[in-house]
Image (cartoon, rainbow over the protein chains, first blue to last red):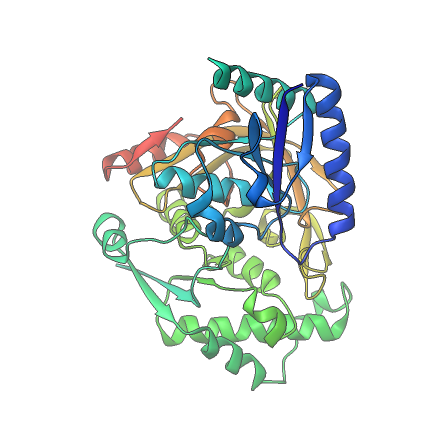
Length: 127
Length: 273
């Protein structure tokens, strides 16, 4: 089974319990649709997988992204839900990445759309 | 020459919003003036006597309304002292120091023809100023908050809707902090332009759409709208090549988009589709 590792960044202003339940729900749905295994991991394990995603859980995560920026690998795939300004944070991060001529995109929308993009990205890696 | 004040630096999370001041002057004739945030905070804290006009007094806690008015008054004072046409404020610095928010102040300033954006966002302030100068409209600085790729729809939300752009409004707390005053507005279900320039001042995005619905969700900033994006554009812009976070929403019922586009192309900017 293909493995997707996810590293979560968030602002301490927000409710972590609520975020964790949202994350679990999303990852369970993605697993059902794609038949891949999804694991939230510490940063040092992020790239020990077939595909690596950065989960932007809340607004205010952008400054934290800058702290890990030198260690992230392209393409930088930002996964986000749509609550707590997580999409807004992802837009700012992606704009920042692209100004530095790095590749990246945001995975956001319906679970079906996200699952389809993850399968496409996995296929691209296999090619 | 337009003079726009930057009160405090851009918020730490606006990592892609720094602007070349010299370029802003050369391209748009905009002079950006840095003002220390302490000038605003000290001014607010040294002034205790203020009261908003009566029409607001029954809408929310009186002490909060009065604090919001102190912020408004101090911003007007800074605007006058520095002869500014508009301003942006690193407003989250007010949470711990003044224990209030500047959302209502921005909303009223924008309703009265004075450009005001939050979080020290300079590209948003310049975008808002251009909207005012080129097509003479007010605009709503908002966060893209959710995207429906299958329907080409996007949810925008923020707490600073200009009162003049609302069909109706009430006050609530500011979303992220749970303190101060945020504007919970209902917008008109009208055609809109979605616009912003890049922090590099060489690109812009200009989408057309229609406000389909107002939302009332708990985990979004207070004024929330669903915009149905016209078929000629795609919401994929936001997922694949956004120019930053905040975008400006402008009501339109005429040729505004073309006028704004022509102006920007004429001064050398490239449109992102």
